[in-house]
Length: 593
Image (tube, rainbow, N blue to C red; front, side, top):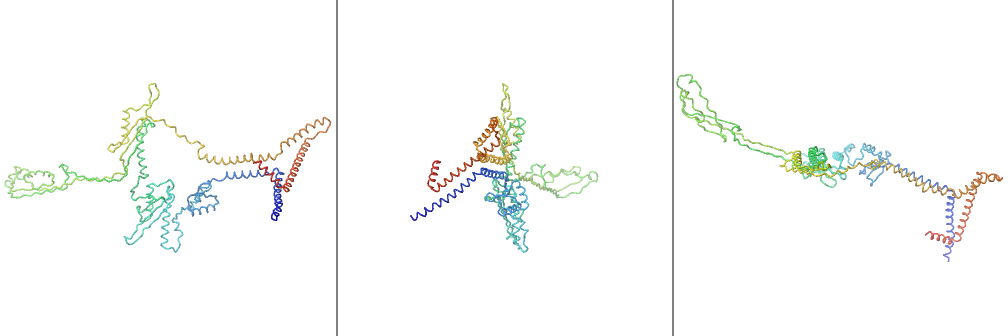
């Protein structure tokens, strides 16, 4: 019992505290009820706040990407510059993307580029601008190498597919001994944009640019690797597939022959009735051919003589001439016959004198008498007829060509005069076949193939119509801006219909009171003339309206008094018997359930 007494004693105190709280809440509610316009003011203020927030959202600037995937050092410098200029910005994607208002994006890029931002983490020759006075030669050489690597990386990053580049140089080591000299080498690591790749020509350009920028560095000593570890540079171009330039050349050759075929057949059948496709096999190998031929000197008239030598010797006694000097003795002997051409062996020796010279003139036989023999030797050297031919086959020659031509049926008229489609005759197809062969330079030795087919074409599908104006990007941007302001208007309308208007109707005078006042006014207006007709004094309508308003106020005061009385009674009952109040509230809750 001693333990229950304090608890029982504490019940009135808690009831008093709850009654004070309830009385404060009731006073607040009574104050709100006594001021009918207060809820309307609160709802209006909330509506204005919502409308202002929506307007600010509608007028918020559109943020675009200024820079992305920048280093932390560059990001700090860029943000410091934006803070200095007072430009709002946002960071997204974990701080790797910087957003600025769209109308300032292009101007900020130009202004930051003027200050060298972002630097992409590569330090160029500006590193040499801050050289200390007492720096060592090794440190100066190292800074120069770092600056050269950074400048090369910046140049490589200017290529479209390259997102980031790093260059590592191993400079040549100078030595007075030839065997101790170490050649220079370089390696380049490329980070490419997603979905982009480098062609063979671009890789060769990077290799030659690096090798040309470093002394004693050859192109074979430059290695280019991408972010996936693939070797892009192959020494000497070995093991490479067809690069972009070779594929472009093949496509250009095929398109050229295709246009030739269509151009020669279009006047005959119409441009829409001819379709041609050409496939060529190109030989991109470099070849050189040397041929040496020897031709014998079979024809004496065409023999190529390099040198010829002949000698003649006489042996025996020669008798002195006798007779009377005169015309016959003074006449010179007849000329000897010319030496016959040498045989193909090239040399002829020891011909007898009687075979080499003709017989002496009988008229001079008495003038000169020869007793003995004569010997003639001749030596002829011929040139060797040798021809050497050196041919360098050009790269990109056509090894084989195939072509397919499809011809549409020609328009015709049937026996009833209706339009129809007719196939080409065999003679016409043969003529077209010959024309195409001549146009494409058909060669059987090369293994070329040609196929000409005459088949009806299907009806051409209607061309794809241009996108309507409401699907253009400009309309989308404009519609987005209009939708923002439209949402503000819809929100304002909903606030008026769902919040402000019901509150104003709720706190307006009731229709019954307004109707009673109107009835009393009408009665007063109607009674006035009748009363005056009956001899009573007329009633002023203004006074009647004021009286009705006063009566309404008195009724409201009476209702308030009754409400306050009932509320006070309930409070007393709650203080006297809280269990009863609890049971009543519990019953209400059960009814609601």
